[in-house]
Length: 482
Image (cartoon, rainbow, N blue to C red; front, side, top):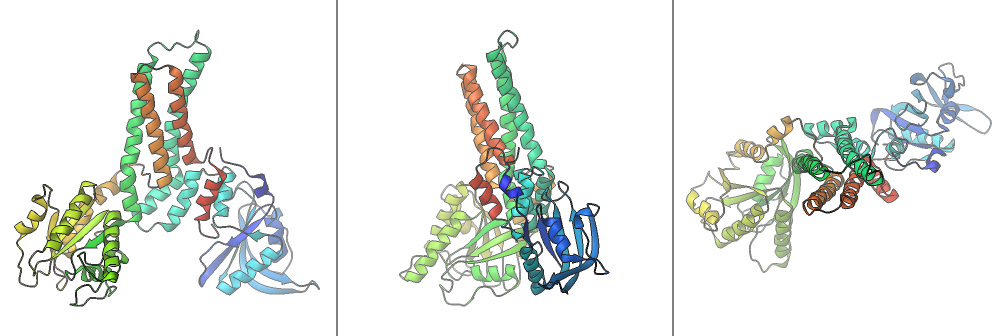
């Protein structure tokens, strides 16, 4: 059940619901008990007559005018509009709602919003319309969060998963898990209170089977969580290598513009430079880093440190080697760093760059950078940023490394929200504790405690038993007018 804040039902809020830019149409949304009265005060029919919006058939939209009335009751036309009326509870917010569809000039939209505020509405906070939909019980918290995810979706997979979550796919799965847990809690409590009618003989074995099923479902959700995050948000990609191997040229080529300064002077890149590009149908959040090497230059040292930080946070590492120059100690040191990151589960592609020049590096020597340390060598691609060689293959390998096509085709529920992921992880830990208690022959009271915690934390995904400050934090990230 959603939280209910009585004071939120006593005031009327308003905001511009469309983008703050010049456009053909702009919408001012008004929600709350005085929405119809404010609409009536500002709206006039095509014959410039007054009307009571509250008496309209709910779900209708009418053409007319917005006017401003001065102290002498003289009216001046502001704009011709379409005004829609939605009566509680059949609206986005579950409250009485009026939306003024006006021409989309920024000055004009703000002018009408000023009139709305003058009539008694207050300015809505970011995400407050959606928060009222949650507090009114129309959507749970997971579906409310999906609204912002849908707005900010940057690719088709993100749109599909956000739309599915908005439709209730994630909520339905979480509710199914909670129903199974609640059944076991209720059975244990009933058996303890009424042992004559509820027998616990053989129950631990039955509960163990249920818990293992719950564990399997939760692990499945968690295993897809990282895949979903990558496809939804994009792949964090660090371009690393020693100075002057072509890292900045690679960024420029993928970005399709001169984003980074490229010269023959080593150490040109002193800081990280970021760009988001689409490669092989996948979003890459590229970070061009300073060449990793030992240096006495303090500014360059900072750049090298930031390069190492980019390496730590990356999902994918593009290790660029200049094939026209012999391998160096710097290449070996970078390879050692990458081996450590690969052991943590990070992906790597090795680019043998500058193939348009005479090659001085054999592939076997490059492989030896990794195999001599007991590690598998990453995929090696040959590239020339002068001719474009290898760039198409790069996209194919990125897609293959992250199984993006395979994942996108799966009919799975993806939990890509970090809050949801952490809640499922905590619930899984509680279920595992129940299994441990069963194996150790503990009493049913202990089962109930951990089952109840799993039930509770899964409920936080839906918005049950969440703290007020968490609700405020979630909706504060929304855009104004939503």
